[in-house]
Length: 374
Image (tube, rainbow, N blue to C red):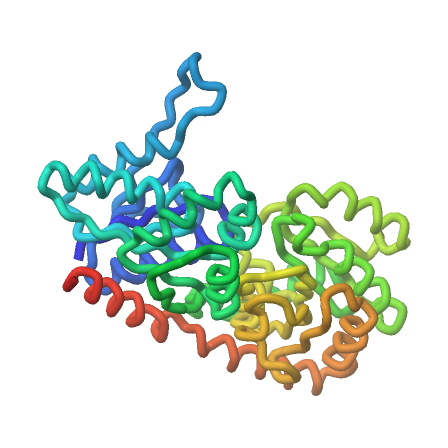
């Protein structure tokens, strides 16, 4: 098959999943064309069966905001025609699904039939999608997709609750590529942050309010009262400044490290003994899964799709949103001794392997074949 993949090229979960999916499809012999405004961060090099088409956004004095959706539409028309694509797979509802629909209609007038599949990832439904100014476009784009997928049952439920959706939504969960997370000897790096053998606790996110980074710091402060520990925060975003301020207020800065954005998270995540993700909501929880495949147990909330990823008491623990006392208590159950930690490490790794891309990829290939046979 010749497949066009439209995604955001950034380090967010939807871009990571779309890129790794494309690379896996290329390994299976499919020809994959990435179409976006920048080369995806996980697409470090173009290999066999992988192509990248940049959406060039030019500046024009008339526009205060350049109409990216229209430029993307034109690029989709061009790539479909000249690369003879069989289908488009767009990740994130807006503006990708609406652009795909417009491209489909333009191509139809030229005698070219190009179906498109829309994958819903989360904030396109749970955050942006709740803005009334976007609702008609999102509903229309979903309903006019040739197939729709969501990354969790939770997200599927949110979509059906918030939008008048007509087509069936197929749940195909996110995945990980275990080979990217092979255990390496990172003891020297770990000693840099925890020179005296302290437990290393990690959080990784885009530091938006929904990630509740302040709960991470409060939980760490409670853990630190009981055992020697260090805190590493990976990422950046709007709550970074207030998180640093809270760290000073809690008196934990000497044991807290803000690393900023890290492109290859697997290079740092495996030095952690525990991963904390206290989100207000998560449509799936890819960061938790990436920790688990690196044999790092996880403390999360029970919000959104996280219960579909976690196994309570095996890969870690889930608490109610905002209950930092319970999160700290559960963290200490895991970190109390080496035997307990190793037990949870093994449980996290076993649970994560259920989401190996080798188990998920056939679902997408079957979906592609079904759409093309219609």
